[in-house]
Amino acid sequence: MVHETPAIQGRASWIWSMLFKSSQTGTRRDCVRSSVEFRRLAWGAEMQKVLLLVAILLASPIISQALARDWSANVQLPGCRNFVEKTNNDYFAQGNCAGLLEGILYLAEEYGVCAPANIDTRQVARIVVRYIDHHPARLDNDFRQLAVEAFREAWPCRR
Image (cartoon, helix red, strand yellow):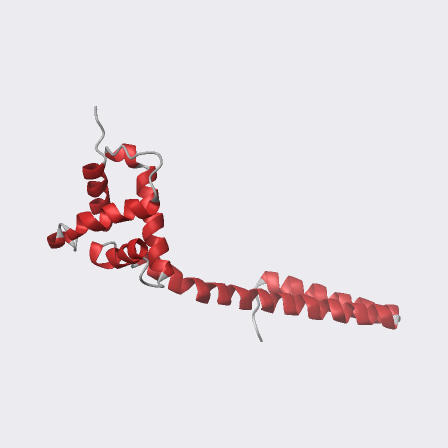
């Protein structure tokens, strides 16, 4: 004997009662309608499971990559250098650099940075790349911290 959960038992008994009642009415159309409803409900439940599995499988590399992100300048600097020099087609790394620097620059005043209002993202990246190139011993440091230091050096707030 197979033991099912109450929810499954309820759904199954409802479907079977629909089929049984429809077949008792005697009309062929009711019986066909009930069997179509049964297939649609059964297929919908299975499809939900398949879609959930596909979503989990698609999201797992993205989640693991985000959790395992290396923020060192060694990893982030090549994307910024390519963004400044326009030398590579690694658009993901370039966009990552540009977005990261724009985000830091958006909060710049909280870090003691007073950047000009009309600064271009490529100029911002150029300042960070130049700063890190002048401090090669710190390539293992957090890229975000080095970017803030570069911004403070380039645009310190006058108090």
